[in-house]
Image (cartoon, rainbow, N blue to C red; front, side, top):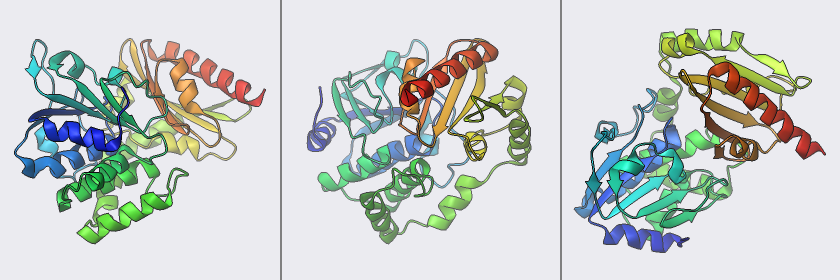
Amino acid sequence: MEVTLKQAGELIEKANKIVLSSHVNPDGDNVGSTLGLYHALKGTNKDIKILLDDDLPDNLGMMEGLDLYQKPQDGEIIECDLLVILDVDVDRIGRVKDVVKAPILNLDHHISNTKVSDYCYVDAKAAATAQIVYSLIKEMNWQFNLEAATCIYTGLCSDTGFFCYSNTTPYTLKAAAELLEIGVKPDKISEIFYQRSFSSVKAAGRAIDTIELYHDGKIALMIIDKALKESADNTEGFVNFARNIRGVDVAVMIKYADDEVTRVSMRSKSVNVSEIAQSIGGGGHIRAAGATVYKNLMEAKDIVLNAIIKGMNKENA
């Protein structure tokens, strides 16, 4: 059932025991919106737990609360008043869905969201789920603290490319300005966000060497195999090396997750990659989307390429 932002806030206010969660393969908006909401509620005497069925990336050290994250355990059952999932549809939270027994409130900005949760607030025009959390705090007259502001600002930066992408709106920049007034340090956030370990920088070079062009140079595909993945602490942003090639419209990174599991990240300049991702079981934004394909790397490559070409031909028909 769809709810208003105020109704979403009232559901949170009524709940005493809350679990927060988000999608596997976490990013800055995922973590920023989750921790932003956690810090905004910190003084309300609620029992709040954060669960994530994946490891955290290593470039988010500017945010307080990373140590609060726990992984769901097989056989564990957590009963609470409300499960709040952020920046994700319900099918991408992994084992959290099986472990937590509670009504689900879904806060998201992905156009592909199926809105099947018990309570759902989706704003596809929001630049980031962190922007929705910012609006929620304003709507409910909750107090911003520096920890919440820093996390929300990081989420905004992550999904707007530090306010360079087309999803950046005047409202987004006004929100960012207010967060800066609270005391957020943009230079510290960008410095940590873009830092990579030496091994990851070396791995980026090897990843660039895997890029191949298809469909008359309009598609650039990068492959992260098992060895390359294991040599890099963080592959976040690697796909942008492919996107920046002149003439490329759709950039895609396919990444080993397991012998029969492949993670897919797509970025585009004009093509709706959200629809393409949905066709292979994923979703996301019009210009940035992803999926998990339950095939080995090379089989997934063929599936993804065919889906992209089909999607591009459909748009050009």
